[in-house]
Length: 375
Image (cartoon, helix red, strand yellow):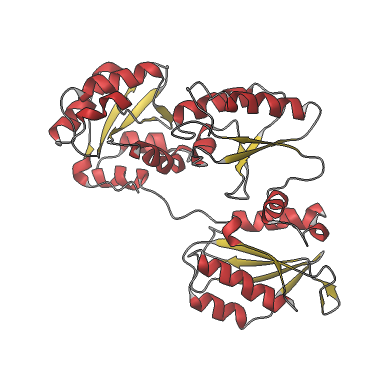
């Protein structure tokens, strides 16, 4: 997790070029005792490979694998440039999050920063921040995102009524660390609500550690309660407004008319339905082969090929969240946190969708500009 103290942030720096900014960043790492002076060459070499600009006026310079020999210990220094620095790719940078990494810690830092990149006005706030605490607040990791994945599913459970499904789903949320025992107690004390189309809902805000949606399906196709069919029960761990995306996903399933097909699905099939993949959706599975997963460089290649297609391409982790993201968004693709060996599910709809998916899958299998080897 990216944790920043006041000593990690250097305010009001000035540089007339991106090369000078990198030199200042290297100097800050040396002064902190993180690296030897030779690490500077690694920062410049890495930048020559491709830009480390992320977005929202933030760049994350870090050394090449070869320069790791000059790293004494892992650390981060943040340099603020209020007047901005024109980066070599034409972007304007106000903050350098400069990383000295002995292994691949920079990938985790990169993923933690993706939440900053989608927030409007952050670049201006970073440029005008007058205290280290303010910069740290803007860059620090936010509250945990809403969770809906294979670990929150409970498929084909031998329940006799919606209440038993609710308890099974609540137990999955507890096993996933999203809730504690008081949540299960609250769910047990209330009757599930009939939503229509075979869907039921149980929810509570008590004992919630992370907003999440548990989904339980019955083993019996003919299960009924109070004269209504029981195809699936959604167990919502509510937390302020953070669970709103989960409600939107639930409503999309309710409106899609796919609910009668939920019974008997495997976890993978259920995730696909929750991700909005219908009979009209074309999909393509493809495996990530990059040694360090979808970090900035390969992610940029994926985004570029996705943007070149005639229709929108979505992508999700097959064993991860049921929420697909746009393959044309760099921050969203990086935010997937896809690692080597994991399967991606690409999806699209419309004429030519299958060919578009093949185009994207082909470049992923080829390594997205990196040398890769089969698993």
